[in-house]
Image 1 (cartoon, rainbow, N blue to C red):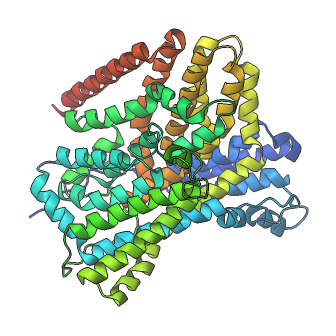
Image 2: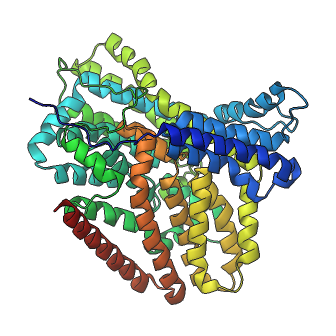
Image 3: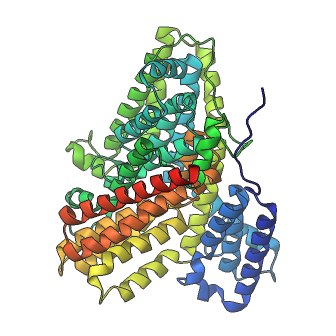
Length: 552
């Protein structure tokens, strides 16, 4: 029988375009030497250049490691003032730490306590996935799901439902949903790019509207002079990007209206190619066919992991201290990095006891899965390290201060449009830096100080716009840690995930921008939210009809 051809268009990975892009970037970096100085770079538009270079190269060349490194290198050149008069080692030191100002980049991000906690959590979760596969829990769940999920749409809706249920933390969401649902979506020929999109869209967008989550805790901490958690809850109906993203996922699945590069990936999946873009660096644990585990060997470890991570987070928030405290306050004060690392450790211990008691794994087999899980997470850890380093580089160049100054100097005179403007700025900043939380930290204090006394309702809408824009930029950015981990959870080529997700995210972003203009005028979610939902439904109907005409 003739093998079906893949629907990859000619020139999907264009080497000529990659070379041209590298030449253009080199020229820009060289020209910048004559247009600015190290002092002139600080807190200027030049401070965004490293991130722009990294993101542009990643999207053009489809190669994330070299693109991120090129961004880091350009940032080092700007930071050191092209110190070729010294030695090459001087620039190298700017990359790994030990500059004159003792800035820490590669070495700094790897020794940062928060980042280290996230890396430990990644390794633990990778080990947990390897254990569930070795024990047969993943295979048993896949067989069980095959008997209950009857269609491709059902597999995707189940993925969305599980992603919404795991709302505690976006990192936890990405890797857990991916490991659990991957066998099910593979069975129904859902492309890995589509799985990565569903995972990514139920990570940060769900966490940002969940009052009990690490994101709620982070946002609450940035609001001074107000009850942060109460303000967060009031802002939920105005978080249009998050709400519209969830609605769009359901509409895409039920209406079968995929478009852009995602439609290509879905057609390829129907033909048997789940990946479209191959990536030799991706490591995937496969279920052991000789394993004797049951569905309980997946469900119980996942439940244990969730419970332990929640307990770990409230423990870091002082819930079990001498003075005690209520659950909400403890969650607001929690350290997600430490909580997830501690919780995943105890989740592994509980899984060990469970598997030994049930005799599905020996102790030697259990310990052998630990390094296997670590190896599976190496690509994600490498990309995260580069992304964190690039963020540290843009921070050292004053990118945050530059954006904050632009907002403060131009906020007056168009208050009704400010929510939409804040949303757009937050999207750009989060996209360029790859961080939602950093964007919160910059913009929310500015919004609070500007409107706390003059217009509290507009302050609420603007804070929501800041959160929504930050999530949108984070959702789109190839250097975002959440986006990276969504790729890892789906075992999908990272740049392919970004390029297939981008049109969907930009569609929701455009609708959200219009809705924030309406909210700025009405200052009411009761009016603005339905308006945005109607626009979204009309847009999806238009796309479905267009796809039908193109297919005819």
